[in-house]
Image: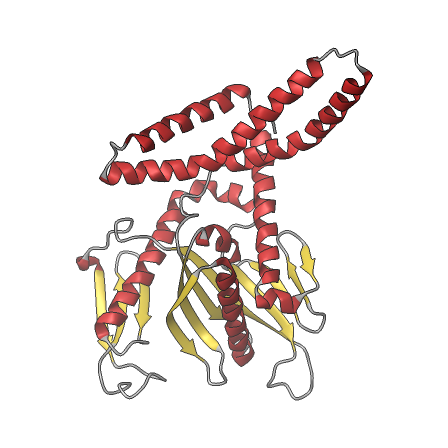
Length: 356
């Protein structure tokens, strides 16, 4: 896809204006924050546009030369061949940089993993997935804070909710929402038979309190006694909190902390994320069909990936990619390869849609 020269001029002009405003020293408060955000978003586009402009100019100049010197002519032809080979790569990178971005891409994310079909084995697999994301997050320089854990009796997770913060968290993790399937011999299986189990992953962009306004009158808050593992205060104090958002029917329960106030704060954090995602789904409802044509709809009921332990492979069904490096995926680096492939496929399909 070739971007018109006029559009490149517009990008250069806009970026120069932003640079001048940032350097003026006259911006304060919200105006400075907004300008900084605009600058950060436009800078990679402007750099790519400038590279494309420079290469186009060099190519045009070389092609217009009428040099009678044989040696200079050979050198010019070699440079022309190089530019013709490299320019499409630069042009594509520019087109990708100019693609409309999801407004939530730069946000932290709420990661929710729940055991699905498969009983104890599904809970063990949910724990494996959580550790995989922890390792991937560590490689990215992100921070993972566990919000809530509902552990199974044999060491797995019936449900785990965590907050992931860092640069570009939602942009990279958003394609992980869906059903993850595992095929392996469970530790509880004495006959050596392969079982199929599943866990559900949901990745929600985390909003700020400004993004989602929740009125007290819309909340029904129940306080009750904690149950399960949790220390000496379990079953002795009413510290667990269940919050129901009456207008939507969304319910969030939290009992991991000994403090009722801390449980309430965590529950509100999760509630805001779910309300924000619900609003996003409503706003983008008209784009549902278009989203299905991309890598994935983000629907958590969609089966997206299979982890086959006997064969040591992982298959992402949305892009038909199979990696025979299961251990590497669960350790983090292999997951990075999968996520990068998903992002590249999404970009390619969106570019193709723009070109139609």
